[in-house]
Image (tube, rainbow, N blue to C red; front, side, top):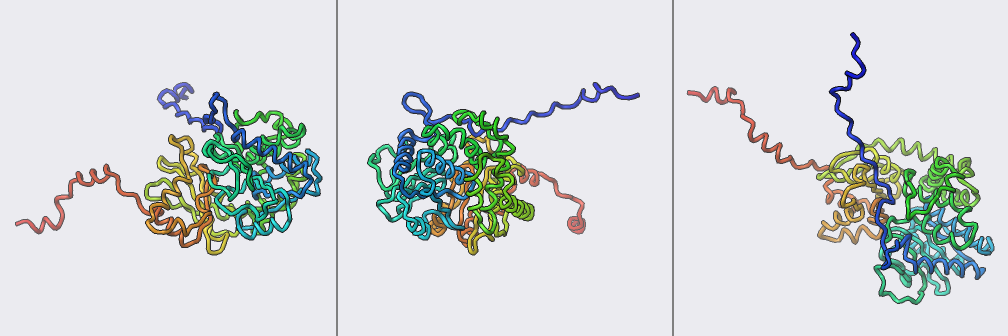
Length: 454
């Protein structure tokens, strides 16, 4: 007799409902004395940035945009370019400076290269902030820094306005900074730039909405729900599908990951695009993405090694391409354990003599309370050293965001860091296991006690 369908489920246990993933915007914004949200940055710094851009456009002077190499930085840079032109600036006066492979904007070679272009205004976007020399050695050049990376250190002669620096003098200095890093949910540099530029001209919202979406999805992923205080992007996604936006992210990010470091291709594609679909058939970008996909597939199957406490998993790769971040993101969604918090992918082949590493929070740890802080974890591990390891690792250690950090450090120092983190060491036996072994009765009828009998 056939079993009835209703009988089969009588004794089955109900499936445990998976807890919904927390959305990036599900945090309480910082508020002012009147209870109003302060977002995406302090009101003073946003006003200062808008005044800077209006002054820059009105001056009709040579201007240099210096965006980071990824989708977030490049899209933000293009939004600034389009805003300046909408404000009446001649396109011939707006140039771009793309930082070279393995360099950062504070390197002396980059400072000299920017100054050689003789700009009167420099706008640096998404490059990360640190204590450094002035952007360029020219007091006649005005600089604006737009950023969202966690930092309270900035180049010399920079005016910073946020709640942690309320006592700073208000006179404008050589450079001024607008940073989103202390105003949750932290806006991407593209989103911060979009919010700065949107009120400056009536065309910006419609012309640059898709750029804001590409840049923001590039940093925060394609599952972002765009809840308040993020802007309402309904009209943008009516015009441009999320699939097209997300496909464009992969294409824009591809050139900077290749060994050729062909970032200019991504910049030119964004500058010419009227929407994400214009990017999707760009041959140079498609070839770069195919190259990267092949390398990711080749490198991604490296088995991880865990720290003694199980909190961090480290995968070691050797690639001339910048695929460590992609692989870290992939493994972060795959590895799962109660203890695991951080995935690190370390690439010893991207820059000779150095290790480039990227860290991501494991998906299973994203909703933990208190939240996982990658930067704090890395710094705490380095601080275990009683010597000068932190100094020897340099300024490019533990940079970025609490949720996505990394660094570029000398290979020998990286091995010291791995030892401090106890990567590959077996965990101590659990107390329960020790107790069980102690209680276990030894076998009595063995050869030794047999021959010992009288």
